[in-house]
Image 1: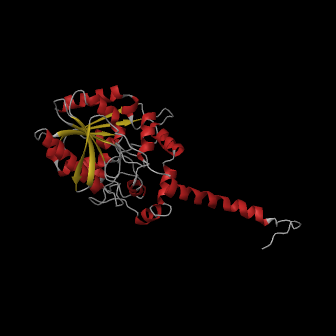
Image 2: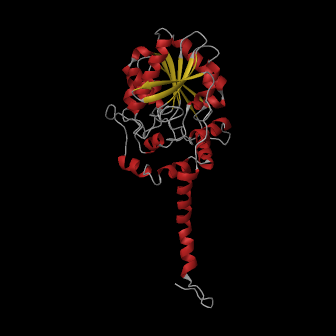
Image 3: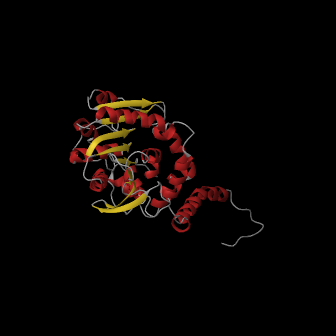
Length: 334
């Protein structure tokens, strides 16, 4: 069409142009995510030595600070869009001065394998088995203590039921499974997967751009503030998460998380079957305070349930109180 200077544009054209702006912005975001984002170097999340195991769950990375004698302690971070071993940093740094302490990056996170596959409770449990076996081998075979955060508390419970000789005690900080939504007596070994959701969020054209939007600085700060129940989040964790999510393959495990693959259907049955000493700690602020079924844990003689006036990561807010509660639990359970 030829444009004539003396002919005014129709009224519909500006409106059409404005309507196309969101599409243009989305297209620019997709192009930047695929072509201009780039990865950044990821420094270690924790002090000590970092090692990689070849396991049934793929390459699994873990940190070790094992110069001190004592019962080894394994720390397991949570599962979310930006999870990694930095989440256990206060506990790791505290206990490395008094006992052997280890922390793993679960499959799909940190320095562990981040390949494009389905991430499930079975995969995570297999990774925990491999690291627990490695730790026991390094220390002559005694059972270990282990603490997990949030959703992986269910994976740790499964690991302890499948290999009870590996563990002397379990610790659970902000565990899932004590509300009506995520508790479950469903099929053993099942999960809450939605394959169609996984296909949609992981579609190659918009999968990574969608993930980049989810883990943008404003979005990540928002979700951490909800976890803390406060704007006073740990800035070190925030900055490390920003580096971790820019690694190749960082989106694949979170896609499984978002589509339900990582949520077990039998978590209530797992907790009820545990017979070794279990320590549970929960906070009173933030989004993760629905513990309507906590009475089930309180009623079990092998469970110790504590609560602090914190968010879901109490070890960042009051590490002294957390370590004191945990040490008291260990003294009573030995």
